[in-house]
Length: 71
Figure 1 (cartoon, rainbow, N blue to C red):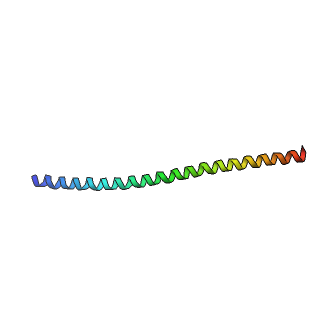
Figure 2 (cartoon, rainbow, N blue to C red; figure 1 turned 90 degrees about the vertical axis):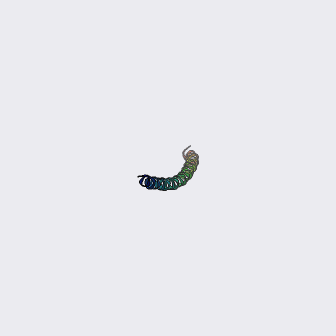
Figure 3 (spheres, one colour; figure 1 turned 120 degrees about the vertical axis):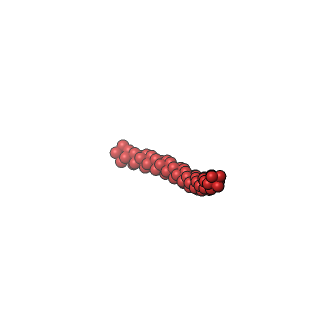
């Protein structure tokens, strides 16, 4: 009976070690994904700011032209 318990304990410990390694790998992948998403978010915010500035400049230029022609 003691031998069976020892075999079971070894199997359980081995399985726990395997699961621990799997969880560490998943955590590393998750951290990598989070860093990539943060980069994309920052790039997206920069793009929106750039487009907003360009749109504002285009609108101001158009109004200046409109006032010059019809003003």
